[in-house]
Image 1: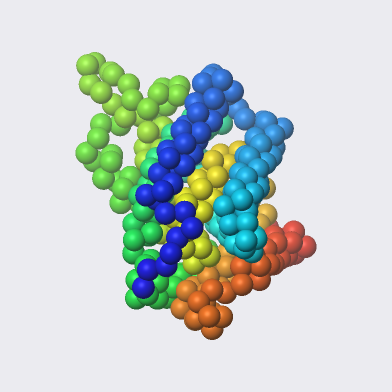
Image 2 (image 1 turned 60 degrees about the vertical axis):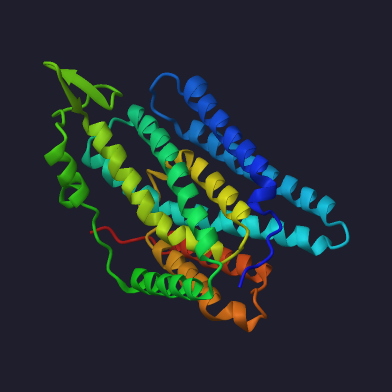
Length: 325
């Protein structure tokens, strides 16, 4: 059964176009001005950019709230709902993206990517992620109209959350990944880095560098993570515009978050339990809780539950540090 959308694509295509243009303008400013020359991103720079991206996202949310309030002045509750749904989706995606950072650390270490070239890899990784997320969200906006699909995704998130909760930690080993093996078998790869180049020519032969292999692997892992995060946000809101914008804003801040947390991310050893509980909660919303509350579980309670799980797992990690082997 189709729900009436507040922001249907047919009426808001111009907004999507403007938003995408804004995103690409910010990325062009980032790479063309602030990171024109490859350099190691300092903790201070990462902190400033993290604050900038979060601030822009919150300003966007405020603008969305006031726009909705003007559009539906007789029902201010709609504007509040929109604001909370965007914020909740943003928090979910931001929280789940911390898992990506664990992978970034392993991949950059495995391929011996110098710190001054890591931003370049992540920049182009973000571009690819934007494209794939847009495709996933477009598909989700169609598929999630069917209750059977909602139940399937809900069960999938429940299973994923339970597996994450009880499955022992596994080391990410890029050397054993089928994609890396396939790339090295079918694409000539240089035996070392060549500054920040993804491809080079040697003796007239075009070779991919280890930097390109690292980029492809990171892109592949983001697709895997999106399988969890996109349905999770659709469990919070049925508005594709809110899913898309909250997802993209969280991704845009992922690079600065990586440089901010890369050195300490291993201290959050209990975070996986918080993320697992979030996925289980979201799965329960899709399978059971939404029906229990007349079609939509209260968004304010959802946000509080998610903050509690994530914040609690981070606090517990710091209070009970992991014992060194």
